[in-house]
Length: 181
Image (cartoon, rainbow, N blue to C red):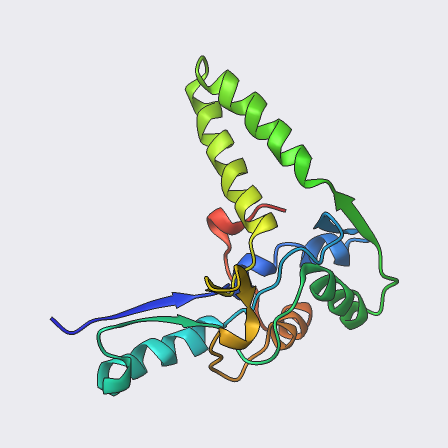
């Protein structure tokens, strides 16, 4: 069986939840100082093109393929700065300590033993903590770091192109479970 396992690094819709907050005059939320993690997000269309290319490109067969979007890796702080610039607003951040997530996880996990729906909330908080502290890039096991230079890029559309389209009303998908903010 020929296979290609595609592992995208980050999706635009997962990084678009704060557009409405910032448009409405609220600060951009950061975990820590906003530079703890970075990613090379990829658009749905660019990811689709990459997946289709796996069918005929034998170099992509029988491999695990991490893939990010075009350009340099970006931090949450850079995402917020660009969003404010696109909106023509003064940059305003609200920093949330990562330790706060640990407290929330601890409390919800304990209460979840008695109130089962809270166990699901604790798991959502664990997932949120993971994304707040781990970069979505290729892991270099030798050096023990995430490495943007090892993370392949594909496609044309950048996250900031997507932000501009979203602000203009040309894009903004239904985020469903991705709607955290």
